Length: 477
Image 1 (cartoon, helix red, strand yellow):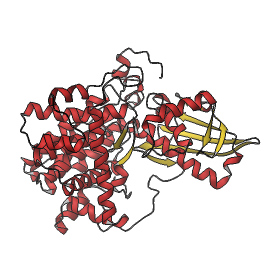
Image 2 (cartoon, helix red, strand yellow):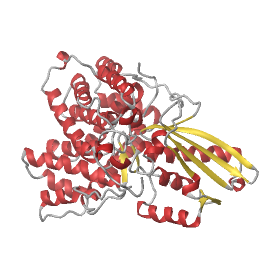
Image 3 (cartoon, rainbow, N blue to C red):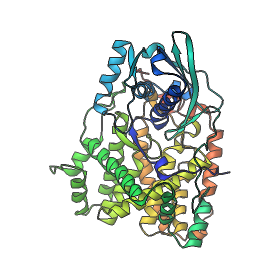
Image 4 (cartoon, helix red, strand yellow):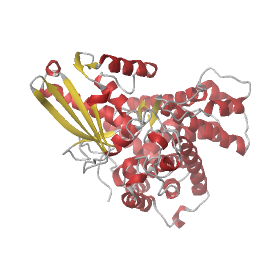
């Protein structure tokens, strides 16, 4: 049964850095919560050392996902939205060499990553596979301790708290499940985007919603552009060569662009074959997730591992379908994405540690399919049908990152998710949705049942699938 959790579009779409929303962004936010609560209980000047213990999936793939780096950056007081990504390695190396760090830039404590961050790979806390405990010490002993869980998409829950712990507001159109959305849209004669907009105004002023979504769009297109112009090898020890720059160069030839807007203008004014459009969609998705794997700035949508799907489909819509870049269309697209993503958060999971990759690529593909469908003129029923089709063909997708790195097969899966979203949209648009046998509610329930039945080794542990069939020896993992 779907929860009544109130989720904003801005909870589903968030700006941060790679490579993982649950293993990088989540722990980052958990440390921030801990520090805030610590300062209510004691003075930072009383702290002499700090210890972080990671459990389960966080421990098993934490190194490859940069969990330790996220913890240290957060302790320094850095923000994922604003941290200078070029300086991350330098900051981490300084902590290692000094065997200390400055809490929030205010107070120096003893902190050696190898001794202060403990990886308990064989111990899983009951509530969720992504558990972590933080403990602050003074000269007199332990002074404060809390346990947190990174539950997917950057969401964090403190031990003992409800998953739905959030300030309650009275939404004009509360929707716990897709059927609620459909019924209210039909009754009020609203599109999905219009209904979501009305709900969002409960939390934020209209101009704040617009500026926030356009900032997300700016980060998405900037990430694509950076990824297309950043050749070389991805970090982590797999020696994965970036493919987006080579594909981009092959598609563009000798034409160069100064910025993402310049690129889109060039794409819009030309006509492309089906094969060329397919290659561009793949290029967009790969570019984002190669940036994500390199600790670049991305938009969590709804996770970092699936960050390339929605930008790729949105660029497909603007450049190859609409043939113009219109801010209202971008806002509309992102509003729908956020709403569809919220249903998976409420009724199933967006955590690969809980549900495998179906909870990441599957959900992002479903979100993108719905947004594309309404933007192309689809009805509410067709839009929900597209979301259902996209997820239906991701059910059971496992999470098996080789070496615990969000590279293989994760980057390629984003291209597949984008293409499936486009296919699902066009199938729905050419269908009479009243004849559909499977609803989005059905598929979300099925996805959650599949997640619970899935063997844990296929849930972001790197203990099954490709992760165990490709022999690698990595220095970091």
